Length: 309
Image (cartoon, rainbow, N blue to C red; front, side, top):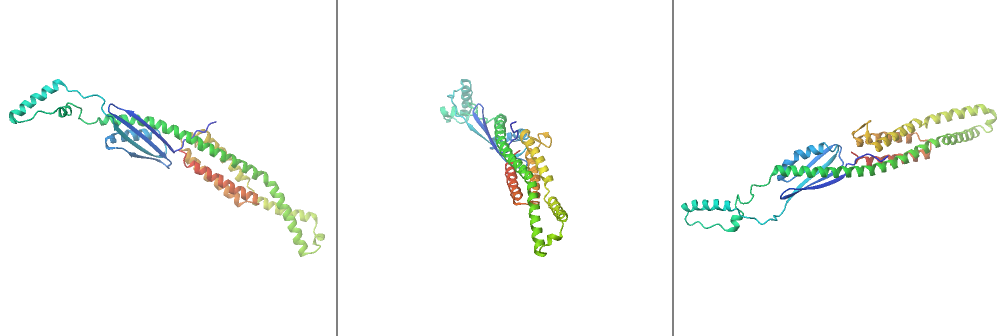
């Protein structure tokens, strides 16, 4: 099954074309504990901030997202034409003005071409620009979500590989425990014989085999209780099962749409606690090294999970 997680690190960009302007929206997302939206908009696109915020709130759960928007006007491709009817109205206005100012000059052609009313000098339609920015943002969000999913799949694969190594170490520790007890019993028997011989030369002639066996069994039982890590290993296996469930389904807390990243962070805290307990109960260097390897792998997974939504 392919992992179903979203990273919080991604980028999306899109453009939309209006009559005389090109609008561009860029989204940059990095990890954050909550959804943190930051807008970098020119004043002419400020009307787009509220709908852009609504769009992102409905599309993204966590992450620090920087929203940048810009516009570029396109050069006019058509040669401006003078409206004859408009020219006649200008001529009438000039006649009225010359009745008061007889020496008024005739307007030049360039002045007529750029005269208010002859060309559209009413300014941009900011409502249309805002709507265009939101349209571009929808495409940018789609890009962002696709990139977050691809990155999330890669992070999940890394964590699944680490989880497989953790499972192998747990199996190794569990398989090593019987030999660990046998080695301890042998060391204990050797130490006990040496101690008795030093204190009472030939003392073993006064100690029955049954007494010696009982003493060894008692010491071995105490040692077995001290290094019993069956509970810690069982919990690590349960945590690994939950970890695979989250990584492969994207479900957190038993329901789709929860924060898988927060759930993973909590899970790794619990796994680290079990690894610490395993290290404190270690009855040999093999278990100590295993506990250290477990902590290293858990920390590697925790670092990857920091980027999961």
